[in-house]
Image: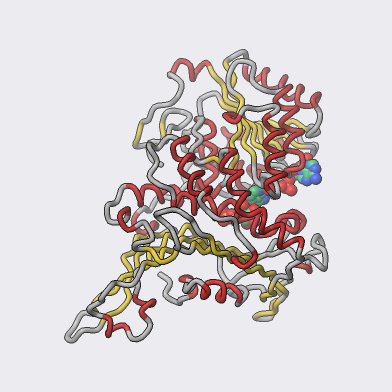
Length: 518
Ligand SMILES: NC(=O)C1=CN([C@@H]2O[C@H](COP(=O)(O)OP(=O)(O)OC[C@H]3O[C@@H](n4cnc5c(N)ncnc54)[C@H](OP(=O)(O)O)[C@@H]3O)[C@@H](O)[C@H]2O)C=CC1
Ligand SMILES: O=C1O[C@H](COP(=O)(O)O)[C@@H](O)[C@H](O)[C@H]1O
């Protein structure tokens, strides 16, 4: 969001904003970002590129350093080669990119250690201290590691490597547990070593541009806010689809499945932001209070609200795509869903009776994430006879395309120019690449910058997490206890047909399958 404090005090070349520290304090202070699990996939794909983009944009403070920490035995130089060799980000084609990269790499260091060794974290602490040179030290740890070692790392880091005179914060990657119980246990364990204020639970969908824009769209446009209720909205659809399978992540995925991987966090967070009441202010606690309220107003999901699917192998255009269970890291008889569709309801005055339909799947025909809002029919519509028998096709639909090719468009009915009265469906279309030609920052950039600035608005509070798990845990338990077999769908298809029946039960048609894409 514009106006977000940047770590250096300058948010962009055009705009100055204030920073937590006064200038003199900033010069006296240091910031270290330790990426724990630096040798891993997420670190290479997202975290280092985001840090470089922030550096390039002048958003990091004067005295910052980056440490990679993992068991792999790497030298500083090898880490630097890994970062520059694998880095692809929005900055790639900018001028001076190579010079900036060289300067950035000089601030990157590596320490090899075990995740449960206090001694190894004490060594890291020594290295950090040496580079901090006695200045006020602020330390951010990013846990980019499998969840079974979160607590070990937090214990060692907090006991042996936390800042002696500044702040210590920890970004925790998902998954935050597998159900209510394990999530509560994780929270309890983390809180033995950290306060809630130090924990930044990341959900990178909250850092996506269009998701951030949801509140702006709702609360700063009179044309939308009055329509935002059961009085005008027929249903809301939250759709996530990927056109690739679990390639390389089958081992992780089989333990979680699509409901835990995407629905319980990314889609539910979007739903909460979409449906919450107006917060008292834009402060993190006010927004998170409203999100918790809406989550608590929802009824926990039951089996009849959900259908699950799993992709199977498929040959197309001379190419063979492997099924989910063909992955050697996935058991042959796995029932883990790679697709799910669900209907959720919010039992409050604003949303009573409005279905919120979620759909998430891997190995589908397209990669897309969007929010679709289908409005009610126009009462006593004067043009009814121009629409034929299917009035659903004539209702307005607002689409927020989160990715790819960010856009907001509103489907309206319009008179085709000319003699006579012929109507057609058209779009009022705000296509980001046409309106805002500069590149859109990656979600991880925004979230890292917020964690550095201590801004918690886009991170998940522990009571929010509890409320989210309460909604999904009974369903997950039922699916697993009853060994519900997922409906198979071919790799690259539109997913199981069961998703249509589920939607039809609530008089809904999936908007993304209407063939009216913008
Ligand atoms: N990858 C992605 O796209 C996304 C990942 N995440 C989350 O981010 C975190 C990191 O993900 P990702 O980078 O893919 O994970 P990786 O499997 O790549 O693991 C990261 C690093 O952790 C160490 N590691 C891996 N397995 C183990 C193990 N069993 N015991 C101890 N250390 C291990 C390895 O480093 P070494 O051997 O050098 O110590 C590895 O390089 C996870 O919590 C994941 O759920 C969230 C969203 C997307
Ligand atoms: O958290 C996750 O998100 C990615 C999708 O993220 P996106 O930003 O590329 O849309 C998903 O592939 C992965 O399974 C999941 O863990």
